[in-house]
Length: 380
Ligand SMILES: *Cc1c(COP(=O)(O)O)cnc(C)c1O
Image: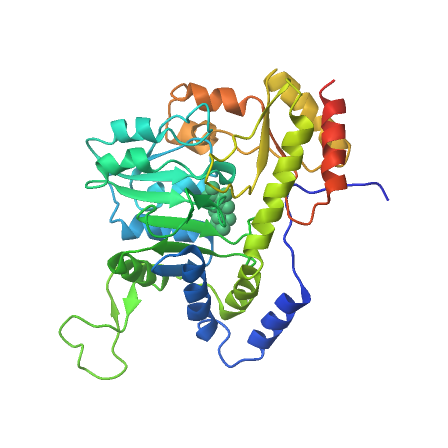
């Protein structure tokens, strides 16, 4: 059989399978005790006061946009170098995403530029920690009195910003995570928001369950024990007990997996260090820990060389990807919504050469060596 590697892959052990099977035999298989248990363990792990789990990372971001009170007329600043959900969450609530360029050195949202642009109708910033490098949130402190800071931490789970876990106290107002199988840990599909604010946590839970609560506040709330209220237009964005059984056993191995991701990145860096055809994924600053959901490299020669290199790596059996086409370029944004195509030159420059190399904890050192060898050949 010829050799092949995906760009990312989950790790499922016997203990994960047993935990899910056990959950499956229980009375409650959707909203049972495992959801709250997983939320508590997850919040504890990232050092947050609250975690609210959702059916996906996208649903979690939608919940964050709702909890922040965003709506029509509000503007939300984000990076173009991200998965569409980071911007779509603004559209879902009728708000308008606005793209601020990336910092050319970190490939993350230029948060100083975002802070300077946070005037007028801007009510929130969705700052993505691209590839897993914790985005610098400090420049946003200046506008936090009027702007909700949401970190899209979907790539950075298990990472640390200056020693503080991404998603914990001292970070954004809300941090979003995804538990899709290619992410740092999985629940199949799933996601979560962490926050320090009990009111945001309450609004997130309300939104996740149709806007329905038993905590009545209106006349009639003493009608009887069946009483419930729908207080807002929420969705069914619940995660299941089965998924949370998996999440709870996965969480135990998260830190070991992130360490292995950092070891793989170190090996890529060592082997590719002398290759001036490439710019490597920006590293984490001293004292911070990269999450390394991805290991993107930029081919300096640009778009044509990237296309050829990509095709050759795929032909060799290496599951490279491109993360991401700048969001404003996608037909819905460009044609339907009429977004400008020339506002983010740094994101365009980075995108033109991007290729994500395989990155997942089960990769062996020999796998890394093979990718590096094939990349060398592909760029000739
Ligand atoms: C994966 C991801 C999401 C969405 O997560 P899903 O669980 O797939 O809905 C959002 N933002 C970023 C940056 C992601 O990588």
